[in-house]
Length: 405
Image 1 (tube, rainbow, N blue to C red):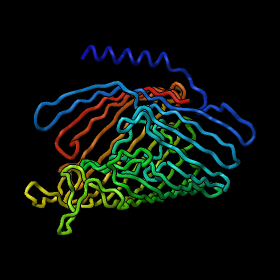
Image 2: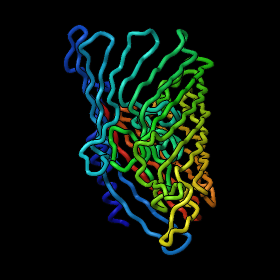
Image 3: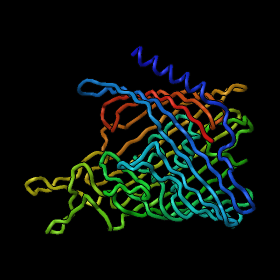
């Protein structure tokens, strides 16, 4: 344990020495009239230490040091009102791919107060998900905003972002393809641009509205300006359905009954969710609150044992092939006046039909900013109870160093 502590301390020292104030995000490397090229990226080096405390058997611990995100981008235009962006991640890839596609879209800006996206962009559900990973207070998104737990990920299609002239109201809509990664422990949506081959194909539609009673506030977490307190109130909904083209783990018996060919990996038929959320910024305080509820049905409600008998699908999150996921979180932080330090905390909770107990967690942490979110070091201690709906507990220590250019 002492050696591990020395190792972590060494990494911290190297990171602190190496991090220097960064320039504004994105660097224009060419600009001539309507033509321009910009490059940028984010580096997130993370140390993770996990201790498990199971109800049955002995616990254990493990640690790792890795790039959580290694995400460059290139953005450019050669045509008035049109911009193209491609962002990829080399910190997390799928099925041996060297990169995972993130944002990859054409964007039209020729309509006042509106932007139209064509390609791969974020589904407009969950305030936490729409807050960039480089502007998170407690390092990670957990239940709320996590694509592993029912919140849609990026989709491949069309999206419109708009607002009124006075900026009091914002609205977002999207429709497109979004795939489902079968695993009964989760409801995992993924970007079709990174298709793993056994994902269930489907389509998603989503809509979102935001109201600012006072001055508009960013979704970026942390209040650096220490100005007046202002609020945002938001609501959103989505619907996902499979499109019959690919259902890897579903079969139909001779008697017409659909069955899942696995007791642990089944194809999703449809899912629908709604969200209520709010944010507050001002006087050094940053607070976000979100609740969302997502209901889903598998394509088959049974699987077949070796003797041909139908067994009800009561597995992971699902009971009789259905589940409702209920998630909420409160997350906040306070920025010290005159010091680049923020104390942060979060409480989040998730329950599903298949859980015996509600999965709860508490995060406490501290952020040190070298240049706001462009260069920072973060430390978070997370205490989880009833992991995966069981009576098992878990603790996580997360240290992250971020550099954005």
